[in-house]
Image (cartoon, rainbow, N blue to C red; front, top):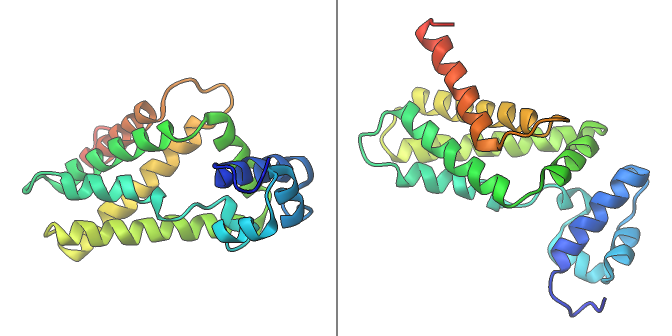
Length: 190
């Protein structure tokens, strides 16, 4: 494939996932990724700062969470805003990824301490952004932070269930189930 053909970021992501899975993250070079993707290293660095960033796309991960928080009607209880945020984010997340690729990505991250740290940083940034979005809605600082952390925790829990081998339910269903468990814990019915 010529470097001028469209879809370079997707080809690079696919090539990187395949190579990381085959030979490990540390053993894979940018040159190998670009060769497999059929692009130049210059093209790689136009899209990604380093090979780690292929696994951690930018702000588009946060966008559905933040859009849903902003779109919730004024006066909506914060836990209902969290539910709406999770609903929208999980639907968008699942629509943009295959379970197979998500499993492969997670195996790569789980096998490398530095990548696990980077994943936690991404989730912390999401919690920070959600805290700010809830604050902009008028939620006080402490409940905004707790609600944001809860949203991230429920998302991570549902995602972990979604990528589990043998799991067939969709991500939205799994997040609803996880949030229902949280509500049961909070109300003392669990």
